[in-house]
Image (cartoon, rainbow, N blue to C red; front, side, top):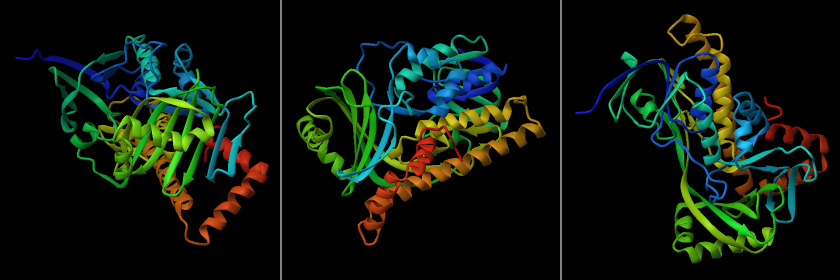
Length: 391
């Protein structure tokens, strides 16, 4: 028989990844009691470890959030790499470049997900008001504001926050549906070791029905990304030799000779929860929305969810009140607008770069050339892409 332990808390956060952990720290800084469930916190991290396949391009506004939470210095003690320029094209000859390759201030930083998770975990352990339980959710009963974990804890809460990813148990057990689409594509991630250091420039090339992307890393490493149909990616992954051949054909002209260290792929699905808030359940990050990752906005949108939620409840207790309900409604309205706008923008951009029926290619090329020549337009786009300025 399992040892049943009762716990009472203001906030139960299911999922201690980047979104859930940053939310926990933010709520604790507001003086709220928090319990975080995750089956595998990142307790240890070694600077000599291999690069994590999951790497996020964290923008300026979210670096500010991490600074406010006291986490940024911990991340700097681990491993990160600045990038100074963003570039996009539909042909190797014509690029729209945002940012200054020789600038002193980066547009953002490439940070491994495990690095952020480790730094956030260390920061959570510094708070007596945060209890981290290394376990999983077994059953959630929103009506009675109670949850049971697989190892026998019974947790009573005022609000439960679903930060447990695209296949969220919190969302499904709260009876919140989703709408979306399967792109019929997969994203292939690969860590490669190069002979020369790759410039601090992240780029995407739309070619035929594929997307080729590069994330620069330190110490002569890079993350090469290919988006293709599910069948196409399966064929690429038939063997390590065939995978290396496909990567070298596409990336050697841009980064020179390299060796493939590690690779994996995942399916591309866009989905949005029908509601972010259905008290006492609140969804954030991929549990609330997942979009095409071509622009690397997934974790940035999740961090913006956290920032908006913390601002909404800053002066609110998490116990049921009319004020709390109004604050959560504002949070939902504000974040849905931003997240849905970004999701639709990714679809439009993907369509615009892949469409080959005239006059789309001519207009696309003219737009890219015009923006490259129009410095004020590039400045606005750079500010938006880096998170310095938002709608």
